Amino acid sequence: MLGDFEEGLGAEVASDAVEWMKNHTIADLRTIAYEMENDGKDTAELWILIGDLTEMVQEITTLDLMRNDIPDAEEALALL
Image (cartoon, rainbow, N blue to C red; front, side, top):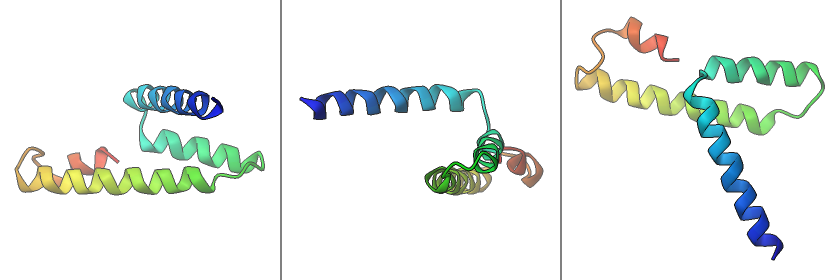
């Protein structure tokens, strides 16, 4: 029974995170991580997420540049 609750909570948290990321950048997430560190909180998992998101953006940007969907590198860097 508890497993069902945890799964539902995980889906809700994931949904909230997706909604938050629609209106924020990885830089916003970095700012939050720094603030949390300054408050003495453990941010190890958050930094892993930031690294993963940054890597995904770089890979997507590379593919877009190869397909000419993004006209120049300056615009691509703005996505980070």
